[in-house]
Length: 277
Image (cartoon, rainbow, N blue to C red; front, side, top):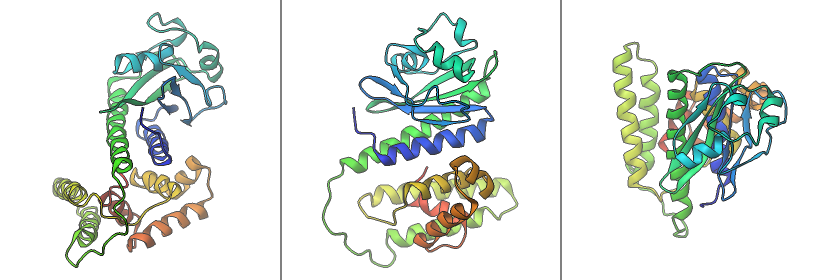
């Protein structure tokens, strides 16, 4: 099983926080998968520490079944479900979770993590919510794959300078155009431009995979990830347990590294550099 690094964990954390905002679920949590099972270490909306650090074995519980099957598994009433083992009833009950879904995050190297959504009442989570979680799991799988590839790429020594008109200029141009797209009132035209920018970003990343660009700290990525989801500074501060002043400082730091002057441009630049999906 490939190593789950700090970059992998940061991506997992951003996914959990972003999914809770996107779906409106009261609880979203997740954990990486290792040889023993799923280690629950990221959560948003928990009221207790009952599930913190819990190891869900590969052959147990909802998460273990999702790992075994390689597809989402849901239950409408956890305590009465007959399709799963009940090794973790005490912890789930202590948190008050009743209806849950577990979605495996699968890459070419197997199931790397499990993403959970939960309600504190009986009833289905709904196809739309499960679809949103599944889409987020797919996006996370792509990001984990990219980090795996970066770890597998051997260092080639000191970087060489990029000539004018190279990938560095392309990154800046894509960031500028992406920001302009947010100002266009025609939603269809704005969407088309955004799609074209994403294609340019991917082409740039593949063309110059080994070309180093600005790097962001895990905290800067967390803040930018929530900013990209439309969160205000106050919301970001609450979700990440930071002060608003610290949130603003992280945004300014990211903007300074990319040489841009707005959070939208910083998000676009981070994507253009392959740091975010």
